[in-house]
Amino acid sequence: NTKRSLQGKMVLITAGPTYEAIDPVRFIGNHSSGKMGFSLAEEAAKRGAKVILISGPSSLHSKHENIQLYRVTSAKEMLDKVFEFYDGIDIGIASAAVADYAPKVVASEKIKKNEDAFTIELIKNPDILKTMGERKAHQFLVGFALETQNEEENAKGKLAKKNLDMIVLNSLRDEGAGFKNDTNKIKIFTKTEKMEFDLKSKENVARDILDYIETQILK
Ligand code: PMT
View 1 (cartoon, rainbow, N blue to C red):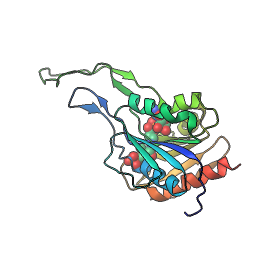
View 2: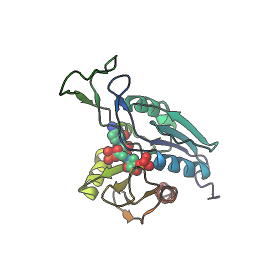
View 3: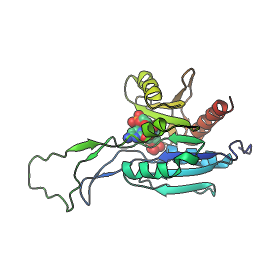
View 4: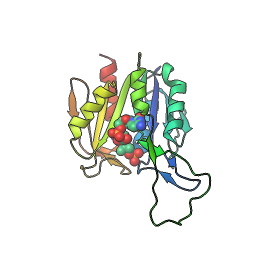
């Protein structure tokens, strides 16, 4: 894309998983690789945007000079980094798979396997995107919904509850969609519109998402 269609825009993207420490060697995490978020960052940068990419643990690297990459580990660190930049951004896209819960206490030493059963008490993490929605002023906010059942209903629920302008649904029931794959299959919802896309490479899915955002912000 040589249109430079996002020239002058500041785009913040969250990507990857978060890791919530149990002890110095163990954590609670998930299967997110960061591919979806890094593809969005690359595509937005190509279109001329300044991109703040805030990623949980991922083996990916970003190449584009328009991308400022910040690596974080936990949901709390991701939240703090997002709000360093939030006031100045035009578009926020939350593609990170943030852990919803974290261990209440992080053991300072490696936990020994002395007991037959072992319980970890979890407490709710901050909802980063919901907080972005609550503090929304001029920002155009895009969320993701990763679902396994009642997909559309849940996605629309998140659109409303988190005060979003748009939500991208991917379902783990669709072959080749969601985590780790190089492909994804999405549906996009706004308050009034719905659009369904075919299975594509995450690079091409990123294009579709940014094309859609552009039609919305130019309205
Ligand atoms: O990284 P990949 O391997 O390429 O995989 C991509 C992906 C499947 C992780 C991605 O496409 C995706 O769906 N990301 C969102 C995953 C998710 O956590 O969905 P959710 O339905 O649980 O959360 C809804 C939205 O709230 C998401 O935008 C999420 O980033 C955000 N959220 C959720 C919880 C929380 N504590 N803070 C948040 O900001």
